Image (cartoon, rainbow, N blue to C red):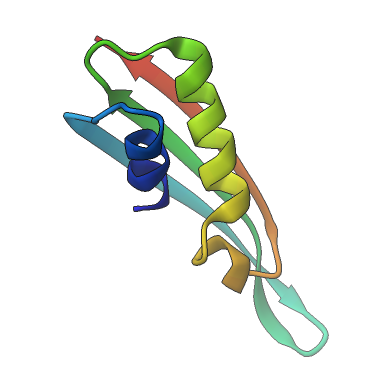
Amino acid sequence: MALSAQLGGAGMTASRLETTATISLEKLPDGFAITKSHLDLVAQVPGADKAKFDAAVKAAETGCPVSKLFKAEISVSARLVS
């Protein structure tokens, strides 16, 4: 949802956003914790400018309210397809 909002703010509309999350769960001295989250995104955004798309992905990555819940390293790889 954060990326959809960022794309809309940049004048782009996605026809498809497909995301796969890979989570790292580690045992720590005080129990288990999610230590890393990697999101792999495939996006179909008709007429998208690659630079504007990349900027929207970065803004969503840093501003996503759900991501802020995790005290973990979060990374994103995004691929724009036609």
